[in-house]
Image (cartoon, rainbow, N blue to C red; front, side, top):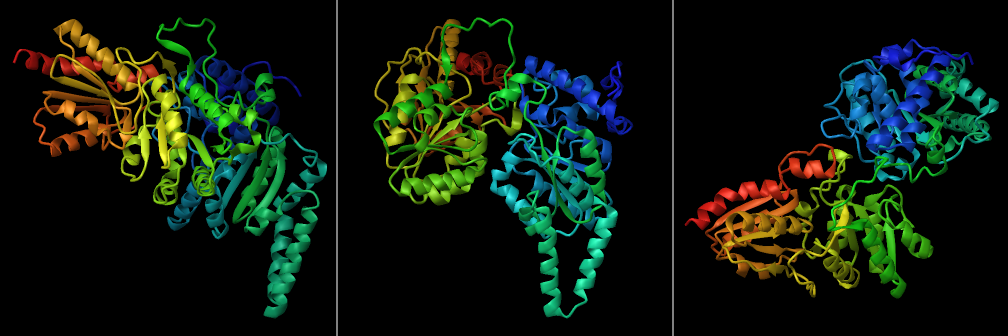
Length: 632
């Protein structure tokens, strides 16, 4: 290959510029894109391995399709960094995942080239089918392409979309980015020849002509003849390539294709554009391509934090381990004693900390793939059979299992233990990943226990409650390091449905949900420093059953404030306000939570401040009312 010394990337300002490049220039551009992605992700954090693996695929798609008109839908979205750079966001790429910068996922409001926003898996095919149907209804002319990773095919939604697409006769192309295997031997001359064959106009005209001729036979012969012809064609191709599954679903299958050979990819996509109807292109890629550490351990380098050159000094109240670490350790400790405890994850063993459980109890560990609804119903089956399932999910992904929570678990009173990781604001992954709605919808479900620990004393006892109670239970915790035990509170016995109270000398009560109890204590200290009075502080602990023991402490207060790192619409504060109103409470009530709007991406600390959930912001909100109460 003749090396072009000057930068190609510097000259790319829009997708049309990519279409002008020859193969050698595209290969060089791939190298430059990888260098930029690695450089920025090392500073900002982000999804590294999956993006490095999709560079050539992105370039081939952009060089063949007209992305000013054609619709390209990315599944999950953590493969889109090269795409963002090449679609007029090159100058902003250094801001990715930073507060006020561009998103780490496709986002409709960010760019006209992002035709569909994503962040959760298995959605692209269904969305693309909708776009293709809309195109045909509106008599428009453009291609619709969905890119889905092989991991996302474990999600039931992907197969629901495939099922619908198979009955759709219009043009749609589904690209399976298969990074679960190395480039296998069948990506060679014979496979390449077959791909050229099945996309060639002459072959397809002949194939269609034969199909029509066989259809002219008497009906009873026509069906048999067509079935025989189809089996001959499939049998020939399946000697070398896995087409039967998709062909049986009604798709034309093309592949596997080397996902790092730009020339082969371009040739295949040019041929695919000539085919009519639903098509599947099977592309083999390598996660972490071009970055040795990510190639060797793609799971660890799937999503990475900023690589800090100097470790910032942490405040002394932070521990060296996260809530995720401690929850996983406690589940393992219980499982060592109780052989009925099993653990379930939905494709997140490392992120949830259940890799530790898997290492000790591989026969009692189940990774069901990106299939949260199945995970919940599977857990229900385990519980109904006498086991104690611990299902660990991120809050944002628990949303996908709400129906099984109601229908299969709560309604049947099955003792499934849900551990809700990343409850609250998660940081740089942004609105698709914030866990802000779990409290709100779970409060509506009867027959459950829901807990939100403030510190390690709470957590340890709540894990025990969760794994040994006879009801469905939900334990919610944030994405951060643990703190020391709640200041001013005496660690004691945690009882279901009871809060703990730090007494004050002033008719104001601040109720903190989970880690917001620490914020409540900080606000109390600020109030004392300014007004020389101490509000009461309540560590709510339990959201269901509702901690009715606190109502007696609150009835005579002139101001009650709740703090929760969740949407305040129909949240814990709203629930408490309703209970107090029923008892004739006549004081002022303030529910502090996340406002009724989607929150952006940025560091967790920045987002908490922007949402007004930090102690100083809350103190400023309360100061005027406290001053009036004090001065009578």
